[in-house]
Length: 340
Ligand code: ADP
Image 1 (cartoon, rainbow, N blue to C red):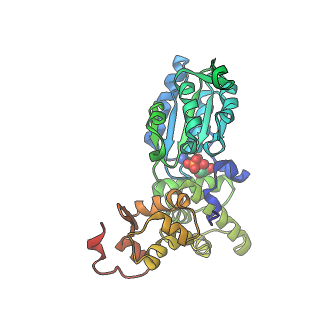
Image 2 (cartoon, protein in one colour):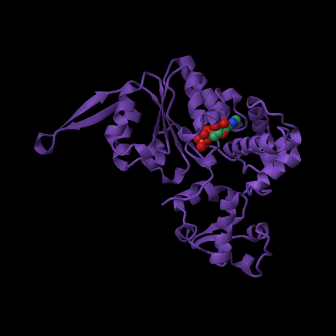
Image 3 (cartoon, protein in one colour):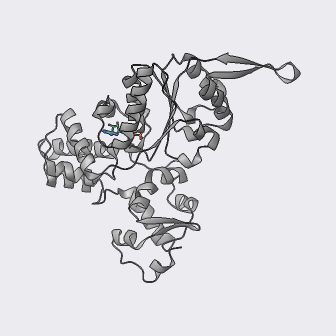
């Protein structure tokens, strides 16, 4: 099913060259996520000092928070090579085979959206992760035989927006598991200042703060908003940027003070108007919005849940009084008491 979503949330490999230009090249250039950064730095340092292969790493968290950035920086810190694959594109073990056999000793294999691996591919991966070998079956029926092929030790970095969908056997084979959380407005403002410098844009602190506040705690959105403001300013303000220009540009895109865009508000409005505030199942919301449940669960809901504009109950999603207020409608009396 097709669904509208702003381009900011596309897969990393589909991002334009300019986006790659903004991506930090070294872990030390990354802003925020300090606890994750420090734990990874220790593991990388120890692996390097002992000359060992770094343990497999699982990164989870909403889109645009830096999973791919960490995954691309780690091999640079290790001084090794990187291969990139996507769980959605690995339909059968044979699709994974070239990545595993090509992996140089100590190199990194990054699998994005690892929760989308079919079970047959996942099972093929277990011995590769655990013992650096794969089992290949040749022939059919009684003539079938399995051969064992050793691999060079490598590090698997898996990224997922849905840690809950990863099976326990796969999850347990990752020795390092890290969750990336939303960035604070101060951290995002720092990212905006650094990206503006890379784009050679003028940027005062008030404008950086405004963009940060309206970027849903997500660096990818902050960078996207920044690029749009740059276009707006070039076209309408002779290249100048101040907080008023930034605000006008973002309002023109329908981005409100909380950083929600039209699609986020449409989700809230659907629950409120069509389903009388909920509770309502995600599939029903998705159908009504002509969207996909996956898109809503990955891109829209995490931030709205985090802001307490909606809640998830055993019977479905409900809008909260805060969510109603955000839409500009007074909270419905009585609803607060029947959230569950
Ligand atoms: P994910 O893989 O989690 O969807 P990405 O790693 O692709 O997210 O991040 C999206 C963009 O946001 C990157 O291109 C990068 O420019 C920026 N970004 C992400 N995390 C950081 C960070 N910690 N510091 C600076 N920029 C970041």
